[in-house]
Image 1 (cartoon, one colour):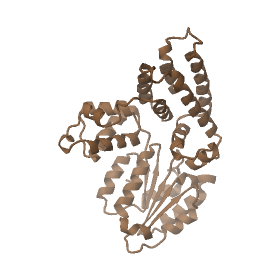
Image 2: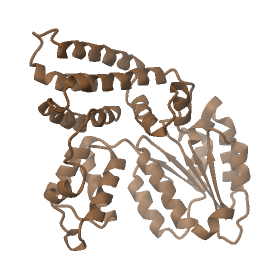
Image 3: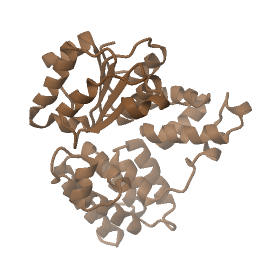
Image 4: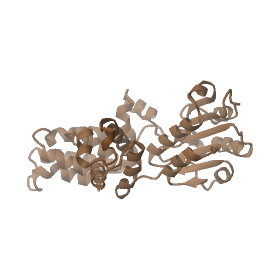
Length: 349
């Protein structure tokens, strides 16, 4: 399995593998699996008692390829392996990534049997599989994993195995409820299934019903403008429309005049973020926008992946138009109760 677009198979293989690959390149748009595979490798090959002397965590935004090489060539101390993890490895690709490719070539040509290296590439930037060093890596010592973005029609296929990881078996109807309420956000899906596993008595986990899903998770909660903003940031069409419909039907609690400013603020920040120094990382965007919390920048990072700058300009214009329409202008342009639905469809289309 030198190259795969099936991250679930990698997670399964780690459990049964007698020996790890020497180098793992984790890439793709579905970053949930990049994080999960990294943690799985750590749990499988780096015991807690060995971490202090044998585990090295680097960030591509601050570390250099030469530091990676030094860490990867260390001898283990009272352990079978050393583990070197590089998060935000795409930052090492600046200037064409020649220095990083040189280091990888060194590790491929002169492998260290006791060394495991994990490179996590995010934000769409990754080394091309056509490069000679990558071809050599996957042929000799490494694994290249690409986690493609999950589509709406695929999400049900991920719900069952994730539920089983939490000791749950969902009925087909329960799977449908989860898919409709969460959409393609796998990180949230994992979180909600974890809540469900903690809340449900063990005797009912073998056949979980839709009613139990809605009772023991946050899926039947009252939506807010921030929920809509987050769904739009992911460009999750199904979830965005579910939330927009719910908010439209609950306009006394959350009038559209309160929702539009939240969306406007988000897309205005997103447009500004496109001018941040590249490569786009949470740290660089936080600094450029003057945001002090990583919690708020996560939606901006999602938006950078989901939209192009010119499209954001068009969305801001649509928000201004919808705001005016919500205040009585353009009264000939359809049902005022459908303003939010119309706006969400325009943003997503």
